[in-house]
Length: 143
Image (cartoon, rainbow, N blue to C red):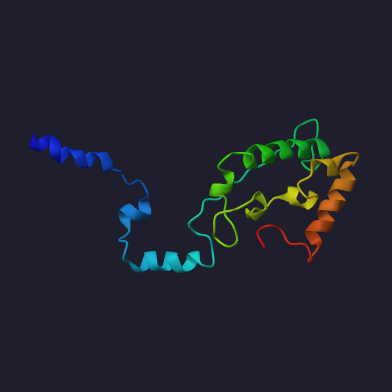
């Protein structure tokens, strides 16, 4: 009976897997430095990168056909139910809408509208992206 009563604590048992918690004392200078750096650089977040590779049919990744596939990949990620819960914002708060999420994405130069590719040729797409990339007045979502 005594062992049963004492084993009730296993209900709240959680194993710790984060190496920062396991191997760095929580009152150390390293933790203080990480907290200070977090104010200016989002060091506690993980970055997700999607690389796009051109196909043999369309050797340029900026070809409208390849960019349409990029739009499909982008929409698959942002349409996840929990995406806005886990995306990083400039303020550090939880995102209220998709536009609050911080990202570096070349599709942003096309205003995330696949319709902006309709009827355009490779040269037109490249010129538009180059113009937006070189524009100092245009800000991306990451500021």
